[in-house]
Length: 531
Image 1 (cartoon, rainbow, N blue to C red):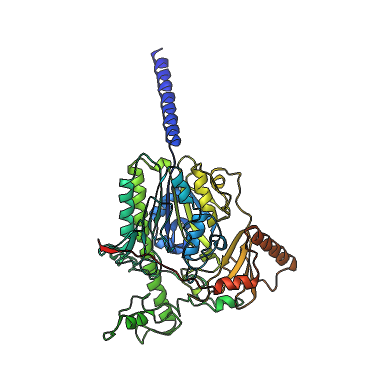
Image 2 (cartoon, rainbow, N blue to C red):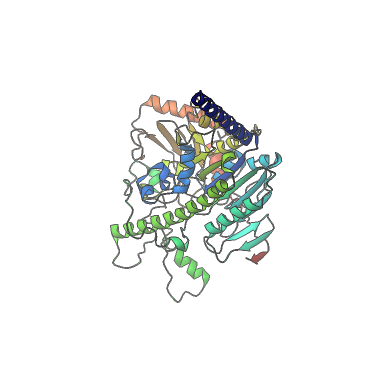
């Protein structure tokens, strides 16, 4: 009898424990959702170990992986215009470049901060909002209770002695810390000082690992005891791809002395002379650090110097992400905070012999994207559903239960993450406008389906490219001239349809005029003071 009573009491205690846990979890869900949106600059998916590339296994990113392991890794997220400012404006507005008005970094003017953005909607609905780090949109951030953004070096910011504009008023320079560390510390400081009676929406955005890849000194000895493997198509000859053959982003021919951390000779009299010396190589000028380093050996040395500095910068970003994840854990915020990590676009880590981005080819077109929300997104899940960066804004609003404006062209993919029966898009669209600066990438647009990618280069040429991504994932074989006519017709009809859907069905002359239009950019750098 006593044994039965103990069993019964144990069962009751277990049920009460379950009920209390359910009640506690429900209480957490009744609280407004917090949003932490983390974005690096030019951080390729190949550099994130959660994505499993050979290079990333040698340079792991354990903290970005934490987000993926506790939530979802998305394998088919695409940028609509693979360049810093235009991607950021598309993310903020949920609208394509030609609609939000910010479609070029160079000679494209500044971002129109009067238009609707997702931070404004969070702010209007009682959230305390902030953006800390890289902005690169020229105009003062709007929709934020607090902003501290990089403004020097044309809005790019610098790795050392970075200058930040605070709330559009004062510009301060940090003379002691690497920019990644400054942004990391500022993020934690803001979280510590925020109004805890309100939910928060924070954009935590890094300069790193943008060119010219200058890591924090704590990482200078990282990766010095081995070399990284070369990508299989490192020595691409661009056969059958005329636009690609015109590029100016080759590791062999277009990395300059600044990129390779060379020291100028004595005797340079002016800053202009010094800048000219550092930039030598941008336009394909031949140089070598010493006369004995030539040919393939020189190309190999440039790659190893580039990739090691790039990945050292990534290591700093990963550490800074770990700091804020630890803060959420330590302060009981992890269960009720959606955490996103992404980059403003992809990047080439030697594939096709390149650095930089801009192309619709996969490495720059595809964005890393990992997201966690405990209890709603299954830990360790992976999605192959196609998504675009214009979808980020409506998705974050959807998670928070906030209204999604009709003017946003993107669509929420919350259901894709939370319901196995939901699917994403059947095709994604791309359009790049800037030419010839900086890397002589022809303006082009195109459509990508699950299996095929059709691209049209149109500015100073009229060239089509078609890739079978299942049989040629590295996009080495342009099959446009040999593909069945029915396939090309079908893809062009799909491309025409998607252009009309997104109101991008302009004439060739109108699109070329967009590239040729010159609108000067203005960067606000108010009164400066030392930190």
